[in-house]
Image (cartoon, rainbow, N blue to C red; front, side, top):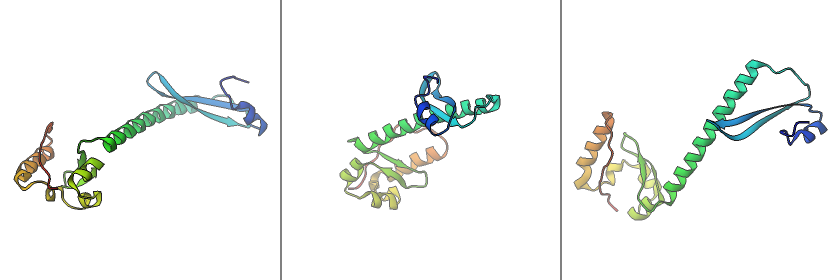
Length: 149
């Protein structure tokens, strides 16, 4: 009969009488609640309570990460700037719509060939130098090059 379980009346209609709820939290913020119902009322198990608390925390971290990924994807898609993600093996992993629109190549073309194929010939050596720095574990904060279109 706890008001914290708004679905308790529906659960009771199908023979569920016990309820257990855990917050989905990240730091001090409650993002949601996980509810479990059972036909039997049992004494709380400290190990189960600890495990469920840890799961609630992990779900909270997942939700925050997922939201950040969605925001990143939206920025990536809507940006008017050319944005790409490339690996150290020399291939684009992802290009945004501005990249394909500006250069005139499809995403499939850009992702299927080494990105050096699209770099302006005069900038290839500098691009290879930046890749070497990244492979050596150095941070490359800023890098400019031109692409063919």
